[in-house]
Length: 201
Image 1 (cartoon, rainbow, N blue to C red):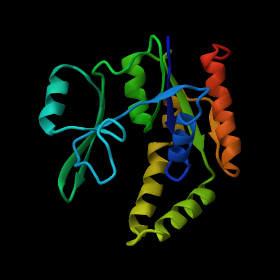
Image 2: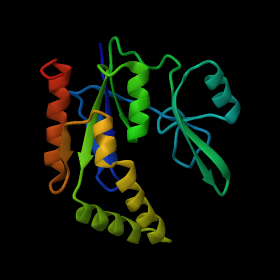
Image 3: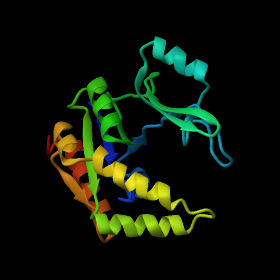
């Protein structure tokens, strides 16, 4: 059976870059877990690549059919936007491996849906001082820097990824991304390959 490798970590730990880089490693042959969203499609995006773009009616249909694995709702100036993972037959775990990215909460729900033996956590960790500097540099590049939101998210991460919650999720192995990006990427790739080869549980 295939696996779903699931990347998690606080903000500014480099999760998105690691996710993209791992998808690009041909030897791992990882298929992205594409989320669904009810938000409008943006310029340059393509349905089925960044997200499956659907309306609320489709979300309700999937809910009623019991196909929603996990979902989140964000209140925006344009109204509520939903992001969710659904199973419409796109998961072929009998022949393929996948990689996703998300929160501890979404990991728990995906693990409950597919089974703990099929979902492998990849918890990325970065020292807090480095995270703050990375987040600040990223925010300074924005047309309208949102420093208040950056600080709010940093504090929220401390709660969302508390040691108690990490332990409750059964996560033991951690990958450090404090310095050289390539070193963390290689460690993740090597671990994924070992799991694929049944060398580790």
